[in-house]
Image (cartoon, rainbow, N blue to C red; front, side):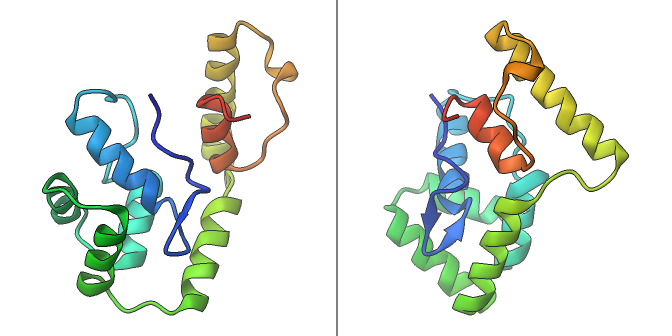
Amino acid sequence: MYPRSPKSLLGGIAHLGRFIDKIRLRNAGKIQDYNYITVGFDKYLADFLGIDAKTFEQRVLAGGTDEELLAWVQANGKPVTDAEIRLFSRNLLKAGPKDDETRRRFQGRLEDIAGKRGVPVGSLPSVTTWADVIELDEGRM
């Protein structure tokens, strides 16, 4: 079982629905090996929204629909405009490796995915963004 795609928008916000899913699935013991809360897209999202990730985690675990959790974010985070949300989502979904270290990590992720599939890396679809690596790893590409 996988969390939803980071490309799935909630309130126009990329990764928010995935973050909610990751919290729920991790708490249910269904995922453990994902970057979680303090790193990656989770941290980038929490920083953008101006929310404490651990507090949000507790709110998600208390229950509620996506819409109720979005309302909580809007009430408890920093004010963001629709234009800021569009820019954040676009930047998150277009983010790729920016230096040699992250390019090595990116290539390593592709090698892991190829290994899981039992195919050479060159046979994987060409991807340039972290969001696409997630899609590829979770079988949506």
